[in-house]
Length: 473
Ligand code: NAD
Image (cartoon, rainbow, N blue to C red):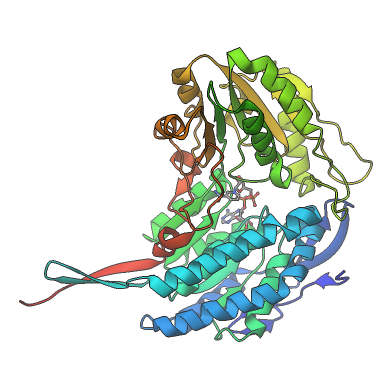
């Protein structure tokens, strides 16, 4: 195990530089409530230096061969250091080792490989009538990421940006920056050209806001809460800067009559509680036909029993602590208010289930009013809302009846019926009758879940500008 998680320097122009400001951000292990390390609290001056370095390193004519080389360097560095990164993720945000070694690190690897494949086959030039349409790198990218999947969030931005020929200033979350420092350290050591990737940690309102409005940042790519996303978009808009936003969700898992109820419930519960429910695309509302409601609730209770909460370093643990004290308080507040709003607590509750650490039991509410806070707002904890419906029209109305539209699922008696229903759901991604996660499928939100898409070819294209050259006949 790594014992010293203290980082004192920021990566600027290929060198780790100790910032002038002495302030630091402490990182707390949410399972023990102990400080396990710290990172620098960067300042506006550090952002200026990092942006200047990224601007200097940006070459709009960078060849595709050079980009491939950069992506290859990142991929191999990442592969080598994955165990260390996984360990940091468990320490800093409490992801159980099976999650840290699994989805937290294996999905980013698959996503990164997906971008390498896109680059291998992408057509950067195309004839349209008498025009030659060329796709060019956007420029300097400001990437701002959250804590819930710290490596994934970084890879989903940094890889396509660099594959597109951009240079990056990365600002990680304050709760889970250690795994990001390990990733950036690995990549820099492996020989990425100086200035292509820069890292500045620090307060969101200082570092994030400066990146969003900096005149030399051409595109800001943000993942996080809807409220902060709105602020980032507002600041970016002032300088007519492109902003892509991956925001919150309140996704519906819709189980239609005739579906395989047992499988739909089992997969649905697993999805809602993955990563302790701290997943933006989690199916946090389960919509069940009233005719099968009782049976569904029994199946849910049985499924939840398998979600053991405890020490994240224990390989048997499926749910660790909430990632931070503030997250813990927020989740407990949602549970208490849902009880006051009249939802029926089926299992779990707001109690702290260990003396130390931010542990909450997996919690399920039945009879949730779709218009109540729990039916509308993202909790970002292990809390599932079960909602009965009468008929497919009502199911669709409830599914679409929140401000969000990020993900979801639909289960029906056959795939065609499920697809027909899925076409009506206002959301960026839906799993149809148990369809598997696809790391190259476009991912992003309708409505307040965001603007733009990440992953695969579509995510890659966000980092390209389009130029049309009208050619003489
Ligand atoms: P957050 O919005 O608080 O913070 C996200 C990032 O923005 C952090 O790096 C933070 O330091 C920075 N930030 C904070 N204030 C800022 C400001 N004023 N200007 C610029 N940057 C600022 O979100 P979080 O708590 O870290 O993450 C949880 C949220 O992220 C949830 O709402 C979740 O749904 C969302 N999320 C969305 C996706 C997606 O892909 N759609 C993925 C993961 C998480």
